Every structure is written in structure tokens, then in C-alpha cells.
Length: 84
Image (cartoon, rainbow, N blue to C red; front, side, top):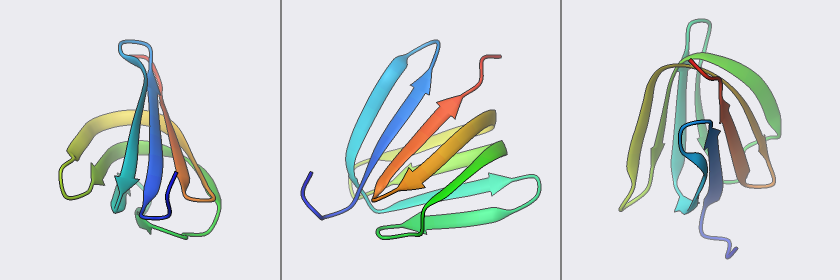
């Protein structure tokens, strides 16, 4: 990966693994906190009960009302959405 942005991996049982390159921001809105993750953000792991927005110039994804786990490390963001 070039150093332009974040690589995002989203996994759920319905769609399997999806990968996105050069993401500029990831916004997490959970019931207890809000995060805005950008390039070179500190390593972090957590659980979401809320929503996640993933954006760059051409991608605008929103996952609303989800329960998921996430991990961010070395500009790779992994989102594992719980089933149902």
C-alpha cells in the first residue's frame, strides 16, 4: 500500500471480506464515545454499538446501528461486524 491513506478491511457474514484503500477518515459513533480516525492514528482496539462512516474522495460508506469489533494499527483498520 502506498502511504496516501488508511487501508480498511470490513468483514461480515453476509458479504465476507471487503477491502478499501486510501481512506481519509473513519468516524465511529458508539453509545459511549465518538472517534475520528485518520492516517497515523494510534493503535486502538474496541467494540462499537452504534455507527461507522468510512470516507475518501470517491468512497462514502455508512454502517448504521451495528455491533462490531474494530482494530486500528499501522494505518490498517479492521472492522468485524457481528451477525444479526
